[in-house]
Length: 415
Image 1 (cartoon, helix red, strand yellow):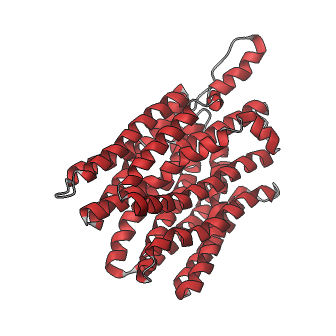
Image 2: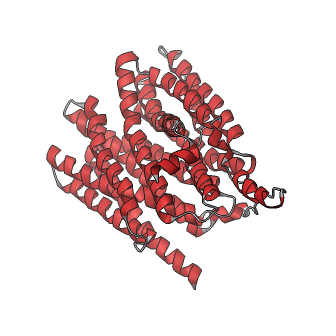
Image 3: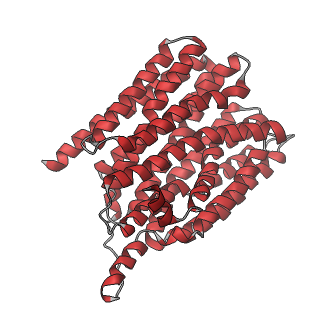
């Protein structure tokens, strides 16, 4: 099966997709780190990070809709160029603010970063789904879809863990503003690489047109669902689930950083955070082995329950040993939850709106992470890292509760 998947998109697709995703995971952390150090204000840094999330929340679904209509390449090229310019612009604003920070200019640059954020993660997933439907004549085996989405979720985990580590290493070696420059370069290389990769033929409308063209020689465009279909509860509940995971990421990283600072080892935060990434990636990929009779909503419930258990351990077990156990358990729940939510999104995406739905899912993670980083960061400053642990429990509790809400939504559709 692996060889067949490689033949469908080409082996170069895999490293390019990974490279295109990395700046997405670096942006919020790089903005918070650089702005907080230069302005000496965590409040300003949190506000700037929130603006990145706000811009992404507004622009992400729009880019997805445009990609569904016009194809991914023009959207990716536009966002790659403008986002790289925005990251470099914030770097310039911070370097010019050494003596007296221009908060308005900094915040404007942060908003531009969010508004131009390339939706590489969602478009890679959408491209995979369209490629599978084309090569399997729309009858894609469930195990193949699960394998692809599990792999993508595993790489998401990798970049979410690797992103903060890369920012920390570059900031330590080259200066606190340099990660913004690095993110700009990676955006240009990775996102433009994906934009011009041959697999770009697999985007909504194009792949279907190729299949239809095999018949009487006249390509036809598939019917596209109205935009209002994107707001249906069966779509919005999984999106809310992804928002909960984003809130978890932001709360966990912020509180973990604060905890490590109390030990005088803030530089080791990324390595400890990686402990969670190991089990998360491992169990995300293990979802492929689950039989089809285990429904997606059941997987969501179990994954949410495991994540809640990890949050309980985090809040009750003191010291480093308890923290490590909690991170391992949290990863065991969060990884499968990511895969499951994307699988559900792929199933419920309205006709012709696959990229839009995937963009909404990816955007929800970024918005959640940025919001939690800003809010929890300020709470932790005043009350200590344990407040962040409570925020982690709230985020995982929401993830579990939304699985039950999704059951209600599904039952309402069948009645």
